[in-house]
Image (tube, rainbow, N blue to C red; front, side, top):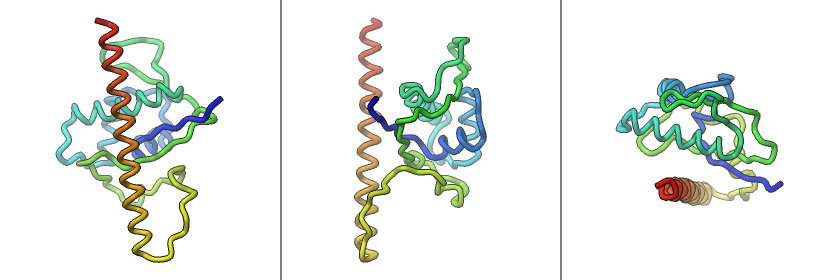
Length: 159
């Protein structure tokens, strides 16, 4: 079995792991997310879609499943145990949002870049951090593109 990875918002990850959420709706998760993040210019519907995209990624990798009762509104999701070979890449909240408590901003478990070489100067560390941030943003954009592309193909097949 091949190992796979999934990029998740670290606040969503923290909510699901630390608060021991068993079953939840997107709206419940959004409300908990708003307690920890200042949405600034992001509207509530856009935030709901943002959170749904992350949950959909977790569904696709087998970490979350839909509740047996299917609904068009208020669909419940069930959090399962993390698949063994799944690597989680934690990302900061999307552009326009900021975490309220900076002490919690640094997650205790992260598997982002443990193989990074040791930098010899502050300038090199800053440059490496900028490169890592750009690469992470590109990976996120690629995941979003592939998700959107898959949804578009599914929509075309339904029509």
